Image (cartoon, rainbow, N blue to C red; front, side):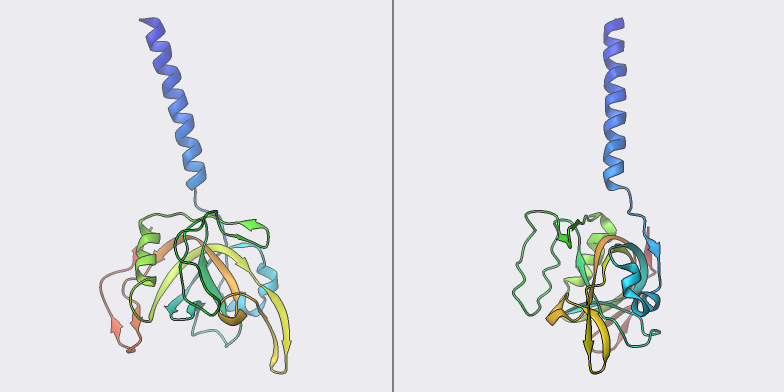
Length: 197
């Protein structure tokens, strides 16, 4: 009887340790809280950092971006999913459909994605027909891109449609606001309260 109890205790400890390891892999990424306006005013300061940002997500043909109407027009921020999930957003240069064979790696940094119910709700919005915009709270890895000089001033870019933008690789969706969905028609849709985690 005692050997059985010993085996059960060992198995219980092994399962508990294995469960902790699983939790560690899925623990939320820690991000530096930043407003989109601050990010746009000094993108180099946040390059390669994990950031925590709330803003308006817009998706459509040749567009998957983050914006905030309160900010002065500036840096464009292109969005993409981390890990193996591909947003499959159509833009200029032949995006491959389907899941990635390996996690997305940008500038030598391997990204991940917490693929939970909130992410799936976010992704369903993104993949809906036509243009869509909604507010969301995201945590992800930011890549400023290259500083480029133009007659109209300097900007950072190299990612997204025609290299328009800096890049935020989404690693976790924290909230998706259900009551801030704007379609191409410009009409506001109210389908309930914000969903939060």
